[in-house]
Length: 493
Image 1 (cartoon, one colour):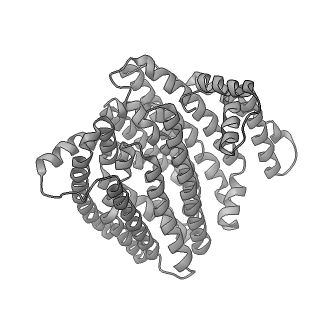
Image 2 (cartoon, rainbow, N blue to C red):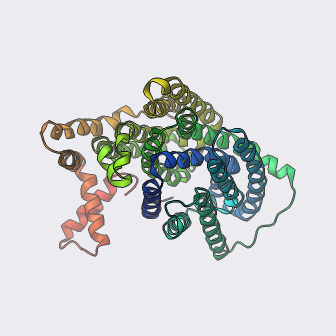
Image 3 (cartoon, one colour):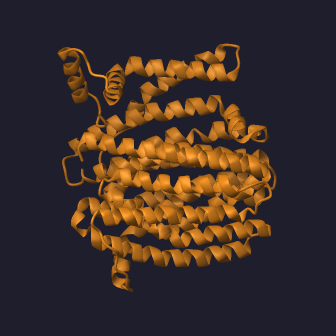
């Protein structure tokens, strides 16, 4: 895919994800204020537990299907029917296992009813066909479906949920939002010329798909264990407001992580197309991407580290302010995953999903073991420490494997300059003033460092924004400079 289309697709995903996250942010901060830290902790526990079953419904079929369509678009219609059929069977099995889990855990009936409501959402999840549009590089439809889902959920929460409302209503709203997004997916697929899929019991075809997709799906389950099982462990071992504080901090971190995920979701088809080509085509793509994501992810870490307590209080209310140290620790998973994503998705693109599963499992085991071992001494902070440590382990193992199996592409050199700028930007902390001013000054210093060190890229961004706003350069020299910048800056531009 050409660089302009890659940049355009990423822009669609970014705009759609920003809008979706705004709806989600508003809905869950409203729920946090309405429920209070302790009941909100029950909600986050239920969401984290249900995610494992949702990922089993997908079982890697989404990423696998997108990859196969990108390689062979003529198979799209057949893949649509076959993958949807398999996901319906995995959904039925997931609901049965979730029901057994719900009965077994020592939780109040309110939490069990909420888990049952989320179980209904598993049955309609196969209708979300984001992978189908991803494989066709139609990221604007991916963004539209995602926005439909989150907007529907937020509207339902604000319209109907009040203090004293049953907690299971939140699961019901989630189910309805997935139904709305799935309906949009079907309308869009028909607009693309694909009719209704054909279903049947075809075990040989199903097994052929599962045999290839299962390692991807198991890697996703291991990733969920890495990111969400610390919440489940805390929910089962702690019974106080700290679980709610952790849940709010964890949700904020995941909101940032979604942009990392969408970034690599968009980049995966381009990585897959380098398979079988000279490795010299891969190195510029990866190196430039590593540098750009390092600048962006460290900017996120800077802001949320310095203003963690203030941001939680502003969003969720004063009752959540004590979660500040949790958010300040958790946010460091963002730059770590921004680096590791290059190597994790490269392993996926080059059909080394078995290795990806193995290393993600190791990272998850590290995260869960540390959370379990330290929860008694550190409380909810153990979950934050475990999650970041598990992601660091995953980064190192994925980097080593991709260098051994695919190409030697390091991450320390692209990270060095943004890291130095990060350290310099901490200087405003020496000023004795309130934290909001310190955070604003630190962000300003970091931005100025970026504009000075990477003035070529900053200038290109400025000129492109100007063109989008209708501004045109006055001279031929300016237009020639723009062309030169487009040639010499990265893959995105």
